[in-house]
Length: 157
Image (cartoon, rainbow, N blue to C red; front, side, top):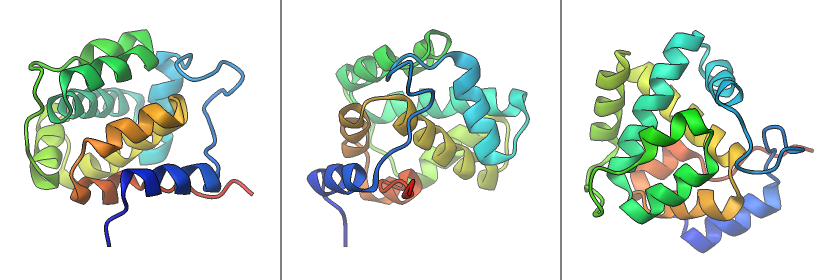
């Protein structure tokens, strides 16, 4: 049963989302913290994590509309913002298989690492941006990508 955007918002808030360097506030994560988060979530090297983050952000920017991509870019570390600008104002329509293919090709990693990397980048975006911004980005994605995005963060009890 698909979770609605409102349902994801409510679930995300109830479960409690841990923020990266919360003392800095959303949008204040630096490039190294973002990449370190992706690397630790995937077990990839810093070089691979950088390639995966860039590839995922580029592909995400293609999949969401231009305005949403700009809003997301405003909350990301400066060194990663350029990868989040959409080539067109209108979002391209493609599913999980194409998303994984594009990320894998751009990052030069196998499909399993590409999918794990997509999840790691989306989890890092969730931790590094405001809850509303993350919810808005996820709401622009097809339901099959929600399973990779894991809209309900783990409980930080």
